[in-house]
Amino acid sequence: MNKIVKRFGKLITASFFLMGIGVVTFLLTPILYPRFGMDTDLPGVFIVEIGVFSYIIGRILKKNLSKVKLVVLIILASVLGIPILSLIVGLIYYLTTGKPLGN
Image 1 (cartoon, rainbow, N blue to C red):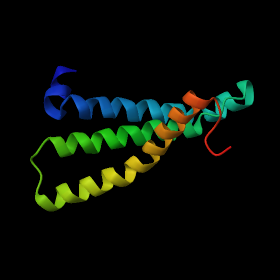
Image 2: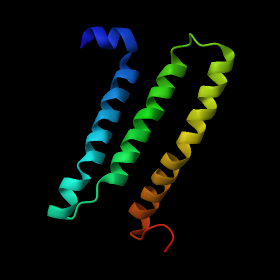
Image 3: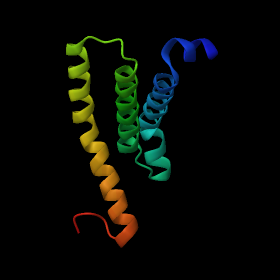
Image 4: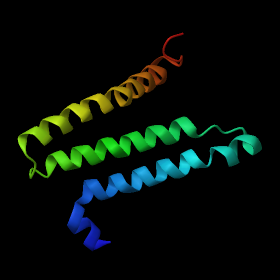
């Protein structure tokens, strides 16, 4: 485990674990939905997206990229951050008012 952290860094290693948890959560949908009524596909996709977002941020912080790759990764992180931001805003609104956003 220490070799993986030394090679990739803490943030990139944590993002791999997040993506793995998200994929497992997404793949558990056919098992959990018929038995318990738990639909876990959207939470799984969001967890994978947060993992990809943190991986891109980790790559940006490594500082050994060319200018073009750095700009492309920053643009990609900005685009991937939009759904995460809307999820956070909706959660804050729900926690403060008790009603879902849009109702």
